[in-house]
Length: 459
Image: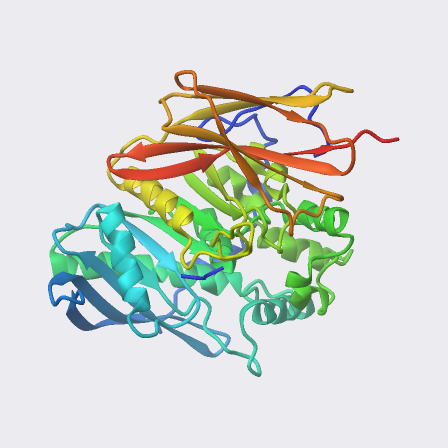
């Protein structure tokens, strides 16, 4: 599935699974309503139909699970009907649970890849998993797809100031209709009630996972947004220019339409506010598993630090070292893994923990580097003993780490504690993060701390 600091000064960091430092609470009236207005609007075109149920077999001919295929129409958006394929994947000997994982994807399923991957993931989670395809409906408006299509919808919003135009809103509505459909399907086919969901997706589908939670729909029990590290968007756009010298080439669809840098108009300010998960952070209190690649060309390396402390509720981060937007790791010679194995393990562990009410580890990380100090002191305390602890670090001449290779070093564990020192570089910049390995039953997975960037002293 190929989806999609300067030296820290006496800064204690509260990390995964812990309560964040209090963030400024936006007035309730300041939370945008355009998203919920669109999602809540009645649409008679919504429909679903179970088109097939088949037994999936292994290469040896034994049954490994059941695949249900559903045709779904989620809505009609500006005269375009949004049709989707919805796959429900149930491995052999796995029973329905009150919580279901709903992964949203862009392209339509091709061949057996989606079914095989879905059954593998569902097997690791030990619960049925659903994959919703066609988020968004594309191509539209003269063949536009993906970011080009989103940018087109943003431009149309700026012209009309019609709150139904941003493409993220119908993308969210397709997930809401997916939840409606899965609940009805489970009652019809299994005589079972699915009560809530873990919403997951990568890149703009990760963005969609955030915004689905932002609607306040109580069925969203948890979210797992992957490779969307642009929460608090206005700040992130400034950070990109600081790190790269200009906006990333990966968002040229927005740059070319004069959407970034963000125009200094009331309509543009409103647009970026209503599609930014940060605007809805008072609602984002459910557990969150955030996954990022350390070499993702879309975002500055320390993008998470602009919003991490402002997120309420339990939260965890996985940084995949030496991985870009598709989360497949590369070795020092540039050879890339075929699958994002580290990501799959951690996301499956998170989903299993939410479905079966098994606690995830809680971690507290302190990072201290007084002014003029020669190193950053990093210490980490867990509420359970990890299997292993590592530090990953790398260097770069500037704050642009996209092509840097991350080296790892095993750390000594003292019970559930680990500590290390990271030297401030004599030239350029150095970045570092800690990673811990855990085990949930037989499933081994990793969690990270937020990272820090150290800058050489000015000469």
